[in-house]
Image 1 (spheres, rainbow, N blue to C red):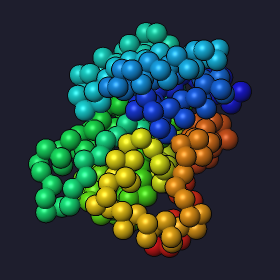
Image 2: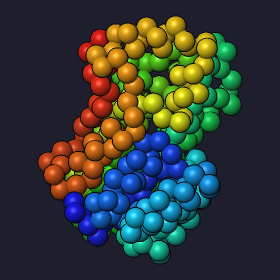
Image 3: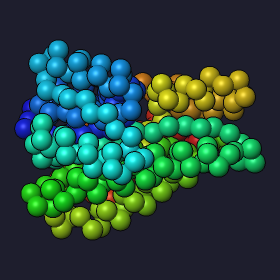
Length: 252
């Protein structure tokens, strides 16, 4: 098992990519902390893992609140032990054209993606430095590289996460802490709101016609990349962005 005796924190693991990664990590021997504001979904993810003989706990946490993150991290360490792997996956969308976007829609997305990722990074890094081992994975997006109509807040936040990742990789490499990002293009519960929005139907259909695979991804197709970056197999990989997008960058 590639993650035996490792403790992994995955934010936003109540559904979609986060849940798929949690299930994959558990199958490889990791103990999981499922972090989310969605209590029902988070508890369901933990229950699925425990039912298969794995070990998982659910901790409710609003990652945009630093005090909540600090409290959640302490709860994880008390229950499971020091945190070895952090997946900054939690996210929200508040789509609107830029000239119609409200301050609330802007700040909500920035607070969750950018601030929440930074708060969790700070919450885990001290123990990783002390133990001289760690894996940190930021979940960015193809929108950080290409932009996305109606998502200037989301694209900006995901781009900022890449800058955060690269700086952390530079600072933490000497402590044997590897920091990378994955930029997926996946059909998750979060993105279905936009994908099914009639306002974006024409743009969506045009994009799929140009896509090399002519389809969006499923979360289970994204999860193996997270396993690679969390395992010893990626021991000489840091500061990188791994695009798992079915080749959509080829047509940009």
